[in-house]
Image (tube, rainbow, N blue to C red; front, side):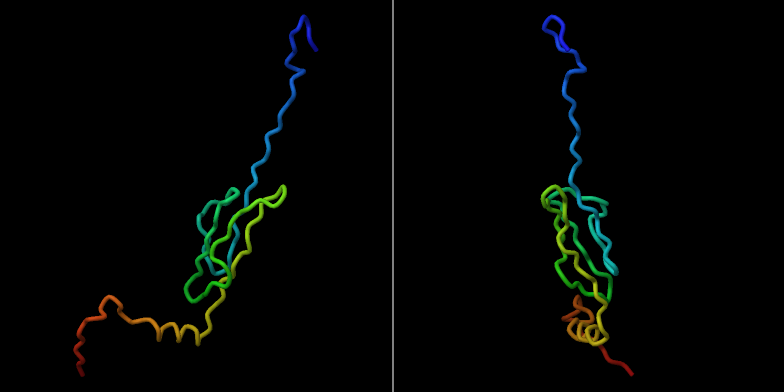
Amino acid sequence: TSKKGKTSLSALPTCEQASALVCTKPVIASGVVTPVDAETAIGGVYTVTCNAHHKLKGAAKMTCSKNGDTAVLSAAPVCEEETCDQRKQKLQMEPLHPEKKNATFLMTK
């Protein structure tokens, strides 16, 4: 109400604070998700690294984006356990000591 051209404070409109849209950090079995923040804002990215003897299936990066009135995280990858044959093949392809590739070794009995 107004008296003599003045508006009372009770007549002012109220504003509600809009909640921020965020994505929740996913849990990936046999993997580590970084950064460690529990939530990320629109445009934020989580990256997955698989534990030893596991390989990544899917994209390592998950991006938080807006879909209408909600925040959604792109598809989460899976960390699959490597088979024995995959581990063996991986070991055959890796040098034992890459830092010593020009070293000379002495064979003894």
